[in-house]
Length: 127
Image 1 (cartoon, helix red, strand yellow):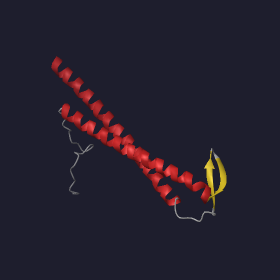
Image 2: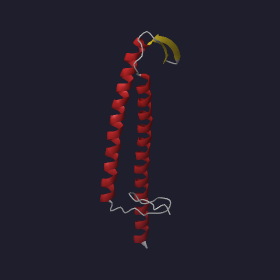
Image 3: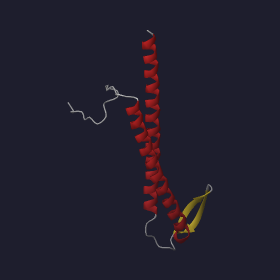
Image 4: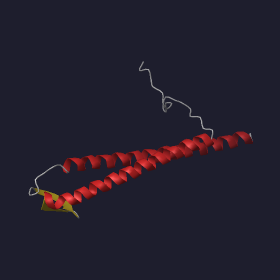
């Protein structure tokens, strides 16, 4: 009886750790998606425009009128920063994923496949 209680307790701890890993990966994936979206928006804005064209920019909550020539360096800096953040988030995601895989091996973890949580790397037949 004591053995089954210990086993149930260990199972619960493993489930909590697995859930924590999955949640962390999901949060990182969401952040990566948001930064990718912002990077794409910057690409559309940093298009070849005439330097004397009027544009508007939000600065500390105030909309100010500038020219493309004035705003372009700041946009380029922001875009470069977003790319660096994106690269770092992707590296962090891969590290977290590798750590989870190592944990699975250390814990002799075998995922139970259910209709709620299908097995990874399997395709449904569509029937």
